[in-house]
Image (tube, rainbow, N blue to C red; front, side, top):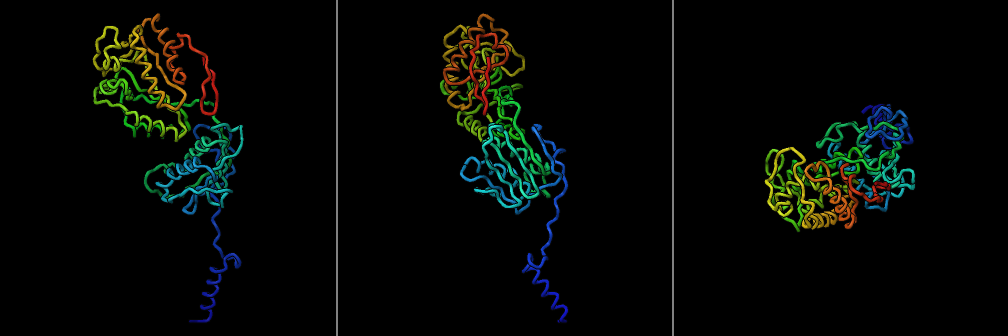
Length: 393
């Protein structure tokens, strides 16, 4: 081999061995310019400061969380589970006592009362994505922003081609409203547990923190009540337009509640009364003033049904239902409906609402209802929302 070729290969070998000393290391490509202020973030954050650069997630990146908290590890794993299918990177979650090296994502807590329970600060540089919050719920909300800043195909369930870049800058976000909710009506049309969980995932992605679960109506009763089993067994047999309907066992309901809690969402169950009750009236004839069971209903008209508000058995029924429901519901609220009870006389409706609110309060829950319940004499109480206290009349 010619001497000059040997010399060439020798030099190349020394470059590989002594990269830093010989200055032969391949240079990392400069970050792509991206404008954080132009990104769509839902809801709109309090402030966005763009630095016109970017961070790129690679197969060398890792997700780190501040050490000492199982809850933070769970949040980090939630993020990893969202990123792994589409990137194929196989992210793991590691605990760290300090800010990790470049190229990684880091989730940590800091004492900052201004951020409350759900606020966060997301600082993105070409070297690091650092998400900070005052409480774990804030970190979870910030994780949703990270998802929104990555390319939309990050949400795909199969491996996609990168690159996986995020615009650089700082986002400071604190929710304006303590109560940010969505309603899911499973009474008129029944949905499976998996469907409900999918709905929870969707509202969590947009940082909502409350799900109102409408569990009973004329067309169906959807929650197992062990002391009144026919409510679900008979009252849950159909739905609007016909069909088999369905209901949740108490274990399934508890599973839904926990799934929501893991996403920092409070479930508010609704048992509508004294109207919108045909499913219950069909299951138990004694809840009707004439003692006759009603036929199951699959239509969409409203306002034709009512519990017999003058019979004591009605309040025994409500007490039993609220007792079981409250025991399965860690959130502070139970919704009693109260709307469109057109065939309930006003002089019967008002004392009914007053009495039902006391039953709910007895089991440590706060009453919520539609605007019609304001006809009653509602008690002024403190409602404890996520991180904030609201005063309601």
